[in-house]
Amino acid sequence: MGRVATLPSAALQLAGYTHGARAFVGPSTVQVDLTDACNQNCVVCWLHAPALSERNRARVKAEASLPWEVFTQLLTDLSAMGTQEIYFAGGGEPLVYKRAWDALAETVRRGFTASLHTNFSLVDDDGIARLLDIGVHHVTVSLWAGTKEAYAATHPGTKPDAFDAVTKRLAALNARKVDRPVTKLYHVLTSENVGDVAAMLALAEDLGCDAVEFAVADLVPGHTDPYGVAPDAAKRVLDLLEPLTDRAVWRTPRVFGLTEVIARLRAIASGRPADSDLVHRVPCFAGWTYARVMADGRVIPCLKAHRVPSGNLHTSRFGDIWKGAKQASFRKATRAVRKEGSFFGKIGNDESAACGCELGCDNLLENQRVAARLGSLTGLERAVLQGARRTPDWFERAVGRTD
Image (tube, rainbow, N blue to C red; front, side, top):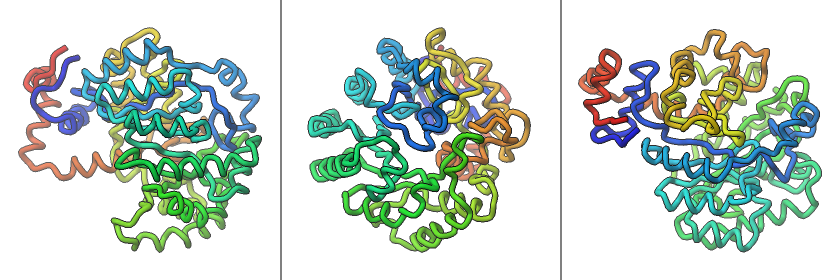
């Protein structure tokens, strides 16, 4: 694939959605799992949770990592396709990867936005200097606690001083930075830390972070479900978070995704799946805006679509996977507003769920943004995009796309 000559990527993604299966540009964001290896065992981690040790034994033992040459070829392909952001996260801790700092530096050098989701426990003083020197754009610290006690409960086996070390170094990073990285504390709420929310909010401010975000644990039935947030606990958290909706928009730390986490907690408080009130309000655009590359090379079309991979980088280039039949099938099946049908049972970690998206959609915020963009189009703009549906080959040539 070559570069787009005329229409911006955002418009071309909407054109792809209008068509229904084809993509006229690459994804905006690609999550890259550099490795499955991790130095921690968080209680509801989909891979390393102690309760999943037997279930995931083979995968954990394999400690898959993306070969360097596969990673750099991926960057080359994504650059040609117009991708803007590389988001380093995954089943493991990105900084365990042998060439993690090289990967961050190469990503920034090639002009991508580099975002790092990390437990931050491996960042020392030299690591702080590297983050600043490289110019990493965003650092999300997955902390899950506002106190030592909650940290110990959600990170079994960690050293007693780990919480202090992480928070001290994050404060140092915030004190030294000028404009980047934008820092965010990320907390997955479980039965072990749900009473710590007030401390989590205070900690983000004390450390000088730009934002704080709350998610609700997505559980694996029969294994990590004892760690779910109970309805009564969800109501107590709502008492803390709902008043923040009146907080000034310029106030830092920003509570990122506040409206969404409130909706999720309200659903849990009434005994329903966390995202049952959210995912059916907007279409799913993930097949056009996002992809995840897993440490074993699998390319999956949304963050939790590991059971329906579109291909593997060990056997195919990303561009071919992106244009391939499996990716097209995902787009056709998931573009609806109402998430109904057998395909949605293949999303997520609960193989018995009729709609895995309802248990927690990590692509929700981007879907909302794209839906708002689609809703703002003029009649003329919508008519132009209809050309993508009626005559896709002509449309692709007209907008300057070359293969």
